[in-house]
Length: 291
Ligand SMILES: C[S@@+](CC[C@H](N)C(=O)[O-])C[C@H]1O[C@@H](n2cnc3c(N)ncnc32)[C@H](O)[C@@H]1O
Image (cartoon, rainbow, N blue to C red; front, side, top):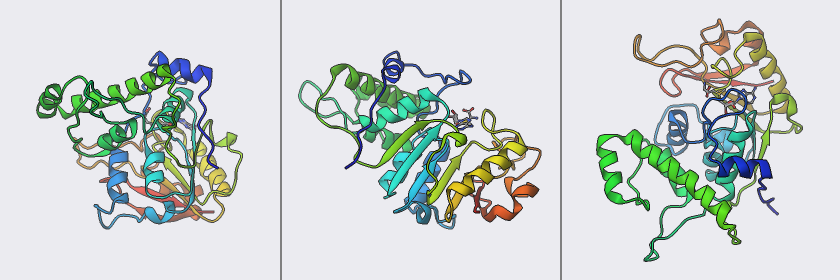
């Protein structure tokens, strides 16, 4: 039997007051699909060829995601992960992601009983590189204008609508089950708080060598050494792996707080490197570690 997701009173309060800043560093919560998740979704769908075959590490596997912001858990659930355990140190981020699972199939209807999109359908739309136009209660016309002028605005409108759906679902105290039926568990915490030690795969997006993540090389090393112990025979997937920009001036790089240009170059980690895909999400790279 799948456990139902339960929100604490504190979590419910944050959601109802529409809190969108993290507790730890007061930065905005990352609760929507960003470029990295959209890219991940394209690779998982088979639309991008030649990249590291991540689906092999996900389908039918028990997966740990740390940090578990964004929608990676839902992407993995939808392609057939066996179980997913999500850890993020920020409790507000966890509150939103939990609520998206709990209210995944919640939707509202127009006066004529026309369905508006559900929480899950909006997450899916936001995962598309070019979000499709979907009708929201505040009018199709607005969406069209937004789409033509500024797709970013459209994303923002979808995100705000999805958050409003969560609040409406909480306030209306719906009694029918709208939860995503999948084994996903959520925890507020860091690696030291993880109790289980039998994961098949760990997915570590935008944490190591990244601003506001685990920035210092010695801590990156300690993190990987601890993580490979709780993923005894599977892969630890880390991205971004390198600090190379796509273009000298305009490209972005996120792996930049370590003195090394590539996580696989850190001497203490060399024995744990199993594979590297340098071209995962342009030049950001994905490194695969093992015990
Ligand atoms: C590290 S941030 C990186 C993205 C971006 N630079 C930013 O500041 O938002 C991504 C996520 O990692 C979480 N996080 C930060 N340090 C963590 C840690 N030691 N363990 C688990 N999650 C952590 C944050 O709460 C956030 O949701």
